[in-house]
Image (cartoon, rainbow, N blue to C red; front, side):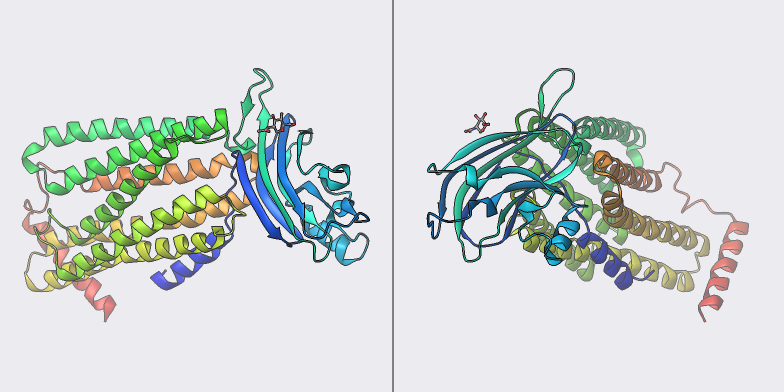
Length: 436
Ligand SMILES: *[C@@H]1O[C@H](CO)[C@@H](O)[C@H](O)[C@H]1NC(C)=O
């Protein structure tokens, strides 16, 4: 598959993706005449609760004979929303609030003179719901401050769980993966110590990448577990963003450096290779800013779509950019094989770089496309499975990279028999003929 069609598929899949947030959220609505204002999405168990506190409600033309039953909050599943729209289109109903497919949370006709209300909605039907405000009065502008908190009660302990039904195991998942990476880092330190005579700079860089990944997962585990208990992140998100950022930059730099063969094939970088790094690193900064905005605004925030697109674009560019150095290396090795007469050595390097190229593509494809496809098709209760799939793929990629590029005491590049040399020359010749 070539790079363009790969990135096209990537973009299409990513635009279908659907994260699901759950935190206590404050939203200010100001002179808004949208007929439908979506707030947050949450996977409820049969012990679900929705706390809604709305204050400073003001309507643009509050006449006394106003039909306030056409203003209100309701919950609706993703599956039944198209049916509600169909009912409106067929003129069965003239407002989403009158549909039987939705769950009314608070209708404004019970709001007499006060300009605020608090309500606790008990939820019995387990499913994923979106909290929506409907305004079926034409030319009516609404202003209000909305605090919404959705949580499930733990059946045994009766404690609140602010993570959506499919995400409640995520703190444990992230913690276990973080332990795995700390173990890998320890193993890597042993390897570096044992093979200390053949260690290159890149191997210490690999250690840094492992440690960043482990710390990133640890902070994510703590962040999610804090949200689970309290409904807000309280500073852990800042640490998480910092390590996400460091992990992103070090990982992409590592892929580029390995791709160029830096430190184990050659001690310097060419200008065009440096240019790739100069593109990828600032783009990672942008990607991380976008990620912060995306996480903090929630899927229905006004900047969400824009920043999501920025993130996707930047991510696709980074993923494509890191492939170039590997392609250049493969091309250089092929040319070297023709000229310098060390066929066996060059064939070995070529095979290694080709494998690496394919593994990088698989890694990018899996963590970006397959994971999001999984997220879209799995039931809301099993959303964590796509996280596990993505983390397993990442783990496999780290292990492969470490194994293939580990420091070698007996570098196979330099111990080659005559027979092997001849066989390799033959293989390279065959390859050239195929190409012509
Ligand atoms: C919000 O409403 C709930 C339910 O009535 C109430 O228990 C809670 O104290 C309110 N919270 C705030 C911050 O007003």
